Image (cartoon, rainbow, N blue to C red):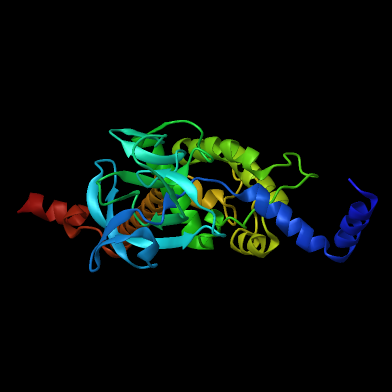
Length: 316
């Protein structure tokens, strides 16, 4: 490298430190885990259209629940990946994008028709969307969960993700939401995703959430763009806290299985009702005892028991 070039680079770093940082971030954060903008989907009123023609609020086909019931689904987020780069997709999917095959959620792989496409992120309020060819697909890739999932594993995971994104917004899918941090315990943000998936599954399925809370807190504080971190801090003021003592204000509050929360609620309500019934029953018994006691006091002795009355009966 020439001396003059080194001087120019040094001046650039001094004058444009944030610009240099932004360029580095853009290089680091790009991934290829989206769908093709040209992939065809069926919209309720518009008919068969390309993904790039969709808007938030449009209704497309998808599946829901354990039985994978076909349904119409609301588009919650659809946007192109930043930049105009073209990426290889196979039948509309990047090789790492996770799709549903029988009872398995897996990477699509390098098969089918390969084309160069601009990539789009697409998320709906269903468990999975379905394209015009009938292929069901998720909004996640192996960049997040590195291994195949069963449908029963995937359902609580995607439900938990939807609860979080419904509260905070869909910036978790944005390419500029995260950055690498050389001072962090894990410098590259993508290297934390697999642990996050593992702990999210453990929390959402088994209710074991303390490690998940810790991992997400570390990820947010060390790798999230400050403009999005403000939102997370506002929505989850106790993120990273001891979730066994209190879930309030933690991200676990949304991720932990809802049936556990409902069970605790039912137990609490049932206990309250039982206590009320016991109090009412006790009050009724006390009142009954008092009324009975007063009746015994106010009622005089039976005249027939008087000795004189008995004597008169004998004489007669």
